[in-house]
Image (tube, rainbow, N blue to C red; front, side, top):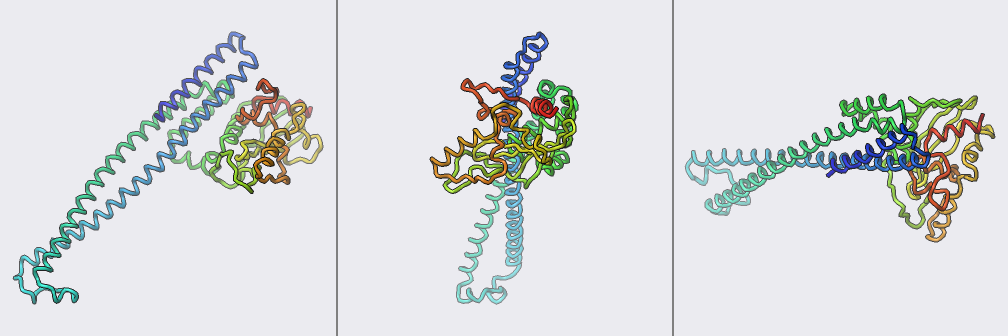
Length: 382
């Protein structure tokens, strides 16, 4: 079922991308249709990432099962040693006459008849033999489960490699010339599973919440391939402690709704003569992205984000959150440095389309991609 879900999502992506590329070639691709296609492709990519998380969970389950098998093997070895000792004692008894003086007896059993003590030994040996047989059956069952799981894992790896190879048209549609280079890197990661995953984990990319993962991936591709007049991508960094995100809208009384996730993404830019960073943070309890400018105190830079889209000052969504907090008696911290940075366009760029509607009809008038954001920044600073 995991492979079927990934295949279905990939099929949908290929269909969307093929149709968009055909319309672009024929000159029928409008801005609205391209935006709609981009949103649907992004949703399918999130579906593929969810499949990857399920596979990680399956890997953890297999690890736990392997540990259980090892414990069973250790327990079986102990039982075998006890059984061997008992057999040795039986052979010793058989080779000697049943003389009470020739047996080493416990002090607590000195007053019991020899026949009763031997009967007790028989009961212990029967229990050990039964326990040993049960352990052997459990070991065989666990071994079969491990073999089945290994086959499933190998099948999933093949399907993931196939999905990676078929994702090239998606990258080509969304990030143009970056597709070939990124596809090569993805294939390299899939082939060198151990080393590549460890290097990725060290940067914390795999632990990023989904919206930050999207903006990080878009910035990485843009840094390698996009060419924007007057603007250059200098760096893409992941900062903060690595931790799993709890993505939920449920908040208990007394909790801070605007508490950001520990990890953030900083994109270094040089636009004309100005150098600065855009810091993206994710607030999981309200599912909002905030963005702020770092590295420059010039007024033209500090007020830059308010000028990207006319009328969007980054506080509309926060007002809605404050109203909800007052109704539910949930606390909200007012001294957060980035609470005014929840721009509507930032939600769109990071894939949070449900928060990015600026008009009653649900259509966004702001930039839809990171490339468009940087183009507007360059236009504002020119």
